[in-house]
Length: 152
Ligand SMILES: [Fe+2]
Ligand SMILES: [Fe+2]
Image (cartoon, rainbow, N blue to C red; front, side, top):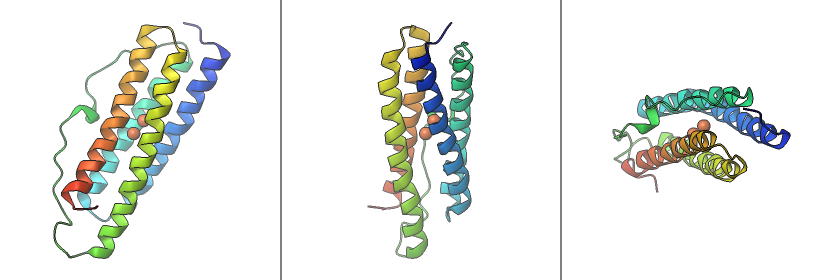
């Protein structure tokens, strides 16, 4: 499969956004106060690494096969750490990390949705659509985390 110059630059742009996500979630995993949230950021970072590597293959003209062993597909049921009125400083800190992450996921999810229209091959569209679903799932998991911790 041969990508056009335009398609290559779209894939490269998505790769640099995935790189930012990997970097962000590595940092946020260290910064988060709650263990549950640390684990969530760690899992999301693994997904972003997988996305990056899929895009790398795509850039080389090899569309990777979709696989189902994806963390984002699992049901997420976080345990609340901030249900009471304690740790208000830590809670505000972790809430900021969550809100910022949702904004990032929303942005990258939109990018995948826009870019897949530039590809004719259905396996490439399926791949990009699959990654987009992962990003939406990431936002959903963070949302669940915020909800259970009463971060409004
Ligand atoms: Fe990603
Ligand atoms: Fe993501």
